[in-house]
Image (cartoon, rainbow, N blue to C red; front, side, top):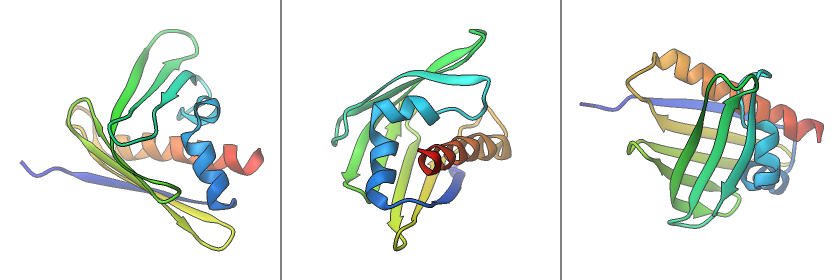
Length: 138
């Protein structure tokens, strides 16, 4: 069965070093890693190396639902690219492109089969848009 890949992107008004720092530092991840204001990311861990583990707790603020988003890094290229595998084997790649003072962030990920592709795209895009907002206002 062929995998469906979803691509999301954002161009952020910040230099690539700041974008990378805010994307990979757990102190920042907890500030932006949720799709809507009624969700939160109370904790994050990030061992930023090949074989290292990423773990971010994502949960509804009312405590009604939550889960750990976990991955293992396959590739880490400083300020350029992150590739990781999710627990179910799906692959995710995020690329960072320096555009002379702004940074384009593109994430390509294998869709899962439980939820509609457009719903997945919208959810991941909302998180990336929240990241963009956080970087640009801090």
